[in-house]
Amino acid sequence: MAPAPSDSAGERRRDAAATRKRLLEAARDLFAERGYEAATVRDIAARAGVNQALLFRYFGSKRKLLAEVVAQGGLERLRTTPPEQLFETALRSMLSQSAPGADRTLEVYLRSIGRGDEAAGALLGLGQEYQSALASLSGAEDGALRADLAMAWLLGIGLMRTVVAREPLAGAEPDAVCRLVLDAVDRLWTAPPRGPDGAGL
Amino acid sequence: MAPAPSDSAGERRRDAAATRKRLLEAARDLFAERGYEAATVRDIAARAGVNQALLFRYFGSKRKLLAEVVAQGGLERLRTTPPEQLFETALRSMLSQSAPGADRTLEVYLRSIGRGDEAAGALLGLGQEYQSALASLSGAEDGALRADLAMAWLLGIGLMRTVVAREPLAGAEPDAVCRLVLDAVDRLWTAPPRGPDGAGL
DNA sequence: CGCTGGTGTAAGCAGCTGCTTACAACGCTA
DNA sequence: TAGCGTTGTAAGCAGCTGCTTACACCAGCG
Image 1 (cartoon, protein in one colour):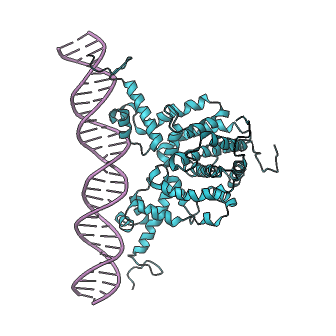
Image 2 (tube, rainbow over the protein chains, first blue to last red):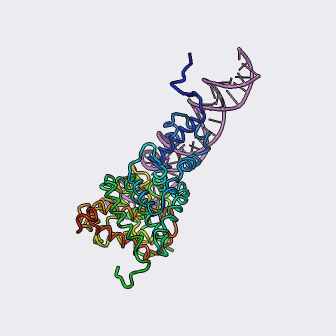
Image 3 (cartoon, each protein chain N blue to C red):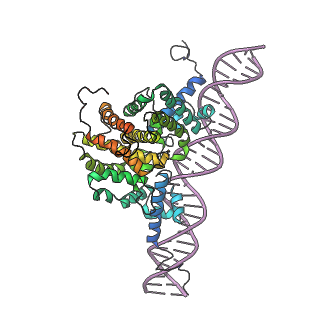
């Protein structure tokens, strides 16, 4: 009789790789739910079902654990989406509820930027790629600024929906939000670069 | 020689009202710079130049101190600014970050929403008032949603400027940003409520 | 003068944080 | 079976947090 290999497959009772993976998943979820600072190493270890000392054995520090979570998330969608569809795709991704297997990296970013120094570095890298792609949409010389403004809207909408949970934005239908936002953003891309001669603001 | 009544006026050496005010100002600045959680009561008391026990004597708790900061700063501008100027006023306030006497409530807001549960209660009410004021700008039935989207943009711009510090947004001139944003937001207020083909205003 | 009450301070509380250490349990190999 | 490195755990560290307590100071008043 086998002692107690729980159920099927080659499940070992002492499996370093599996424990590491469970810690990584628990950290990913807790960072996304509460943000980096509010997710404690004790909570992460508890959700993974292991002792917190293992977290430091496998990852060294909480900061390195975050780095690994972020590195694992990646930015594949960004690289596989043509620029003219990028804003709407990202917006709809932001508007759809977090699916169980979805990429939660953006949530981690969103919840962790309250204090700049910890996660903002990683955000800068991601934002740089978005900026480059979106800047090409406007022929104006200040295309990068317009891209920044569009990204700022994206971030703000995510903040209001997932963190502040303000109604009616939080519960609005993605299509309704998309229609309003895309219409205004279209104006953002196409507005004349300088002031329309003597236009009174 | 007089002992040390500092300088002019009726400055008392033990002035409860003045101490309270200094604590309030120190808290407002530190909350705006670091966010609610990262600004400790010891830091606030130190910046005010008093003992931290006074903070609890005058305000009861850190949480109530935040409530008073928000109530004092944000609502004043909200009530003295007509709705049609509110968005631009708030946007310009967000774009000029460190004016000495400026209203920093929005900075407090955006730095403190990372962790929802602590500061959210005091800040949600402020957002509610902004939403009500801005919702009146659009005659459409989804005016509240449009107001949420405008506030999301405001927050996102502040986030990108002060926290992420992304260029060219962080260093852009307020006038240039205002022109682009206000132009697009005007479209947000006036876009037809349903599909562009349906009810054509 | 002594008394009283408002103002300010130093010290300390329990609880939490990230992180470390000493040690037990396990399972592979000889 | 005996040895031994790997995997896991309990306990504890220093440092920080919001908050409290005990007490010194100072001004006004009898």
